[in-house]
Amino acid sequence: MLIGTIFYSGAFAAAYAWALAWILERRDRKYGQGSVSSADSLGAGLYVFAFIFFSNLLIVSTKPAYAGFYAGALITALAGFCLYKESVYKVRARRVKHRRRAEVRLLEHHIVKDPGNASYYERLSEVYESLGDKTKALETARMAAKLEPTVSNHWRLKNLEE
Image 1 (cartoon, helix red, strand yellow):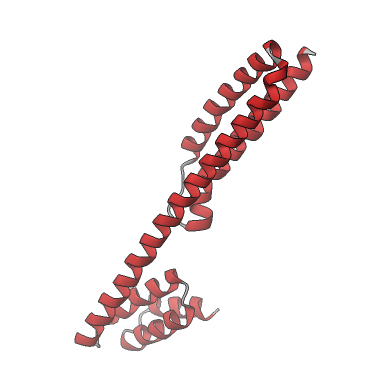
Image 2 (cartoon, rainbow, N blue to C red):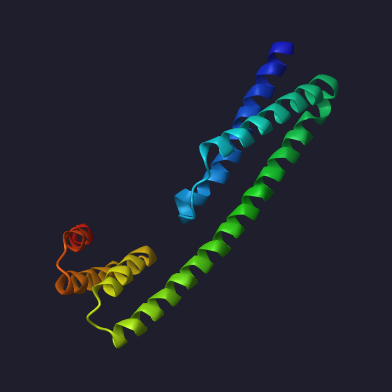
């Protein structure tokens, strides 16, 4: 019985800590909003692992009838945290997209005033690429390479064409 309790507590705590780390690292993978460092993720995971492991041992060994309720409460709390972080990431992604669109408008305004400045076209190409508009990014990269035929502009153009 004791070995089963230890195994259950360890497996549940490891799965819970992994799920928490996955939620925290989702920020970079899905939304591209900067990564969480491995040390931060590991620290949070170890703290959560220890807490869940020892609390599960305590609950399962003293009140086995409440173990399922406790596991359900922990999973519900993790799901709530996941939904909260997902909504925060979505709001930040909208803000970033709004800022990039504003930057596009500003760069286009400056290009109208100074159409011979290749650096405007280079930056505009980068912003279009980050917004996901590959055709406009390719068009502005071609214009930048035409105005200023540097190696970096040609490499950027080549990478966008692939």
